Image 1: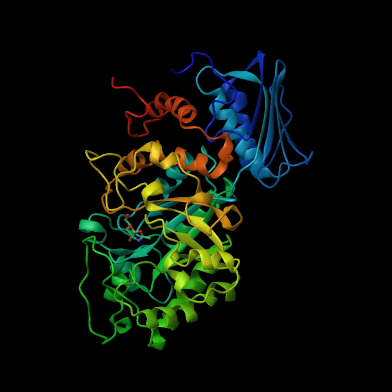
Image 2: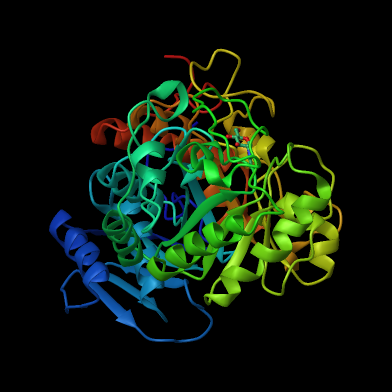
Length: 467
Ligand code: NGO
């Protein structure tokens, strides 16, 4: 059962090291917590009676680690880098929730993986800048530090590309998205606004333009990109694998290079995601030809390419990152890529796809990778998932949320919570420090917080007894 008194370790993700001082508490005012939150966003660290924020490197905290000390006279938060202070404040916010009583002791914390991601699919259903920002605010509470935006697919194109206006006029226009229910697109200014907002919160935006498959929206907008130059029909169904850019056409590469250069110009983060999944109507030879031309392009513009793991069938330039997504426990060439020194992001659909149904009755979501109850999303080790892909090869873990069945922010939240906190803990907390029973007690504490904030969540019977 859930304990009645707060404990220092009642945080998600579980901190790497917690040393409670049970006799000590400190009651912090909401104003002091708010001042600390503003301070880490603005970078100005005022002296404060209740909280002292210090940027100094007293040892081993790394780029994102922090040390939080709570004594009877106040709180001291130290980090080597501003990101560490920001994550430390997220811990503080969780501990202070409710009555402001902070349990005494010391937390020393740093992440297992550098890349802890969440993906939002804007192609199957568009979400506005304000909706993306609000979602991000919920993600950072769990120390998620990469926001992957899936910006194009068969059903829609969601980012303005100068020189190619019909991509968004048509591909982002009325009737786009699954069932035609998710129109809209980001201008470059909108995108920059999201990127800046994310960066202020120490989150890197990872933009994805999916290719050579998943491109029907682009082909509708520009028939000159099709094999025979003939127009194709817009599609709003959820089939996959029927569209492809043409590997043997120079127009293809002019288009792709403009798109990737545009993305590189507006993306301060180090990554461009080029998709590469499910190219069922591209021959294996064309697929490799296409990738041999396209995978070097992010590097040409100062970025690293990320692709879904099908790209492991091609020659991968140095620095390319492979994102594993299938439910099968087969390495599919990812082991060879890892052996050749390529980094891997783990996103196995049967564990971390937030769009899978929780149980057979879940109103939203898909079930092609099986059902993903919360414990399934929690109870696995990314370093043991694929033979030949061990801890050293892993850049991190990411939870995609595909939006075929989503129609609102409430839908996004319902599939995200409480599974995203589970994945966030997989990505942050050392494996030896993770335990399902502990997680379920800690995540249960979020129900009143989500309710107070109007955040929709799935009241999983694994966590909350029937009420
Ligand atoms: C697959 C597919 C997507 C779907 C998603 C739905 C990948 C990488 N490609 O994941 O197009 O939206 O499943 O779960």
